[in-house]
Amino acid sequence: MSTREATISLMAQREDPLSPLAEALARVGDRWTLLVVEALLDGPRRFNDLLDQLPGIAANILSERLKRLEREGLIVARPYSDRPPRAAYQLTAEGGELAGALRLLASWGAGHTDLAEAPRHSACGTPIEVRWYCPTCDQLVDHEPQHAEVHSV
Image 1 (cartoon, rainbow, N blue to C red):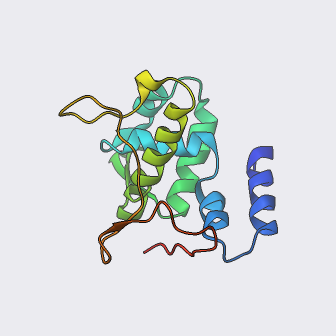
Image 2 (image 1 turned 120 degrees about the horizontal axis):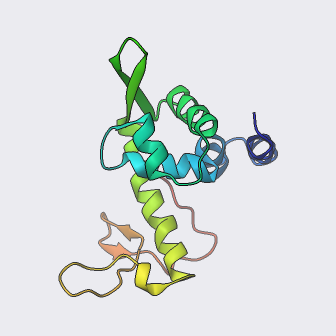
């Protein structure tokens, strides 16, 4: 376990053990893991393809992250060669659910760096905004009181 993973694990232990954020951080709470998930959003990738797509990641770090994501049930490795053993990696349905969270993080990052990188509406080119919406009440919930509980489904 790397120093960063140990720190995240310790942070998760200090948080309320039932905290959804602590759970998420314990499972995917580091830069490379999230970037691996992002690289897999478009479909299965082989190890060397991931290395090429993630400049700066060392092969041993990628291997470790892939094993961890597989243990967490967020990706599956599909063998395509026995000799030498090789696999293509793809997101499970649960792993694919991270797409929304990654979009939120990317949107936040774009809003605090360069607006040219912000996601845009394809019809008019305007940067899009993320909003919380309740489909039952047909209302935006951006202005709920601070103490209001938000439940994930």
